[in-house]
Image 1: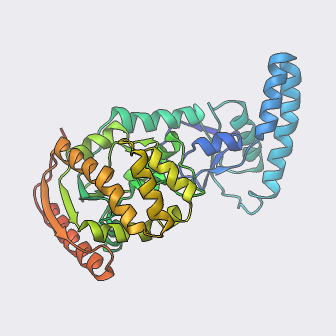
Image 2: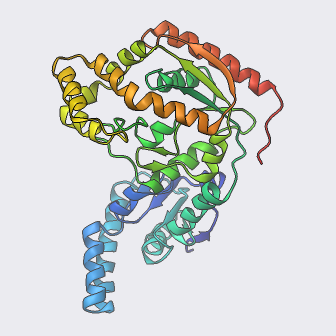
Image 3: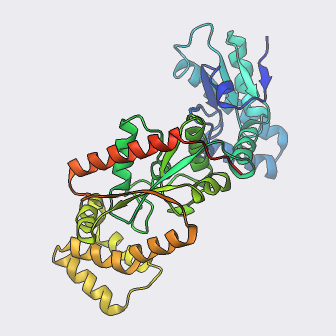
Length: 361
């Protein structure tokens, strides 16, 4: 019995399979893939390039023959390793770029083993259309509450405390692998591609309960180099906000701890200075570098906040006009005050949850 063909790509449909197998090359998988998929390539990047070159420059027949040999060896290796312990009732879903030769070659062999194998019709392109339809052309049936506040007010940390209190949260910076500022790149961790960010985002959104509000940080429409899709940005732009308020000196001290990796990397710090939209003068740059040389990083953080972050926050707040439902004063450096702030935010969100739901326009 051969493999079945399916075009269902919803979260519920994928959950019916024991494993989702992406047979594309590792570089294709790295760029984006179905959430939870396992990469068992039938052609490596080098093999795929070689076969493609032969196909174009020599002959289709030779390319297919050499490609078939690579596929056979790679599938055999997967059967002896990643798939060696799968039981007789194993039910995998296999996909490649567009549901063509690579996925069908793997699926045919798995079906011959006796496993209940399915192939995704249209392959990754079917999945990608689903993501675009949801995030670009559709509407999200979710109500958001924004955790707002100027840089250094511990928004990200308090978002984590809310999740521990069973408040629904969406960690956009975590999904984008970026701290959401000009200095926010994570050392040694490049951001996911835009497509992979959107895949992670849609999976996170689908896991949320639409009957309950979702708390997210107040972000701009970009996190690092990743753009928030229109369906989500439209909901965030109109969401009510809860503001965390802290004194500049306290926020500066908090940032010294939160950005300790950046402080240890002077080259990255200097590079960040040059990316500021309001370009600092030579005199100001020299002063900032002198503060860094002297280890006065709290003073440096306060200076950068005054020039860039605080004015940018005020401009964004005035531009969007999001309704304010609560304002919480805290010293972000004090763990007990962060815990108290999380309690207050959770209470405000519960009150919003009890109120009539806002309807999506």
